[in-house]
Amino acid sequence: MRAQLRITFQNTPSSEAIRQLIEEQAEHLEQYFERMTACHVVFKLPDGNHRSGGLFEVGIHIKMPGGQTVDVGRTPQADDRYTDPQFAVTDAFRRARRRLSDRAKVMRNEVKALHKRVERSLDQPD
Figure 1 (tube, rainbow, N blue to C red):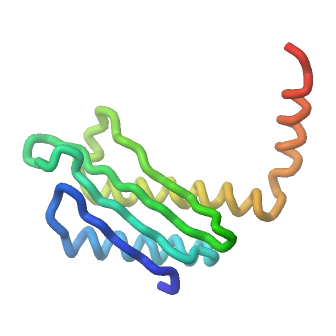
Figure 2 (spheres, rainbow, N blue to C red):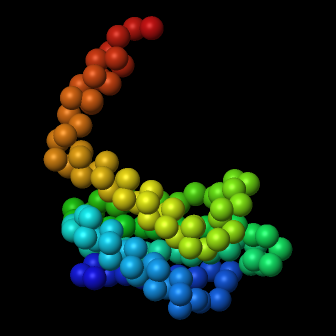
């Protein structure tokens, strides 16, 4: 991986299996969007006690050239799938791919027509 990758575990012990999954997902993300310069992944268990049914959270902060950033993170609300750490990681990276895809389209001016339509609709009175 060419981009700098930093992984932080919060309220949960470091796991080599989760670290490896994050590294694989980050590498795949970098292949998808080569302009990444750095990626910081925070893997956490909010209450610090997974045995009592806590949901894992994964936050991703991606830096790109020109000082642009993409942040992915959310607190899962009553979704038992987030009790599986692998699901939490893969879901966060799926959302990151989507955000990077949207950002790439903007950078390539592929959404110019959409912006014009939105601007026209905002200019029209209700």
